[in-house]
Length: 331
Image 1 (tube, rainbow, N blue to C red):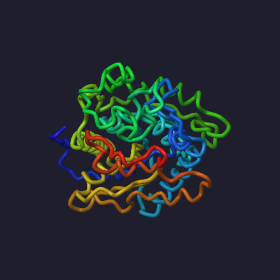
Image 2: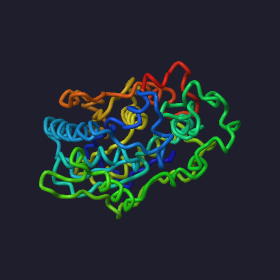
Image 3: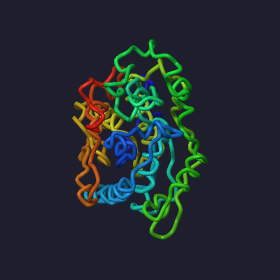
Image 4: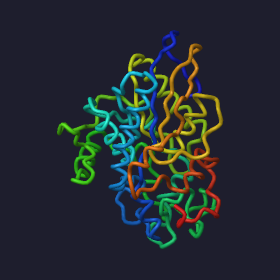
């Protein structure tokens, strides 16, 4: 996606709100010295915690406040990464915003398909030192720091050697997964009026991930390209609307750097909010950058997983490994 074009020469004015997902279930397991990945059918696809669902709703209300204070149109469309934690966050935020019947899923918003990501969920899962959500792999894992080409295939989860597109649930599958996950505590698909959100089956994704798998990793530039391409296409299609995009820590900071030309923020916590608008010359400005102060409204939750510094820093979109000093207990 090195050539990124907008069909119209007019300066579109679509505001874009970007939201990182809320608190993850697997991080809680890691804090207890356990691996959620080791027992999960889809170890790359952790759900939110109950508190994470509460954070998502609070984030939706915070988005409405930011948009209103900037004099922007209300959010009318919501797009999400196909990974469950983002879909649940997007549904919670959309429900809180109101007036939104469905979310659309595009893998352009998915987590970075880099070596660090694979090592966080796919290596040595049947051993005590196997993947447990630590970005780049647990320091004590026998294969941490070992080149990807030297990691035996039989020590990888089978999904790691499939095209990344196979890791992304379809809209129909996501609707079923989200429906099954609804409880009295989460209520991620039930709005205040009882309306049920669904995943729009009509949206045609701009990116699939089919070119990436273990050993064929995505670069930071590839990540920035796919994120920007989606923003430009939505900007072209919906110039008079405000669109909310729900993604992951690394992709959100890389998108910030690409759109604004400024350095990436150091760390963006759970439900960090960015608001982008066009200036008179057609460039992007960000009057809101990574704000998650609204999490003060949710007692007892965590504001971040501490490996986000590795995920969103040099290892956020590259193919290296996380430094061994990042311990699982620090997640």
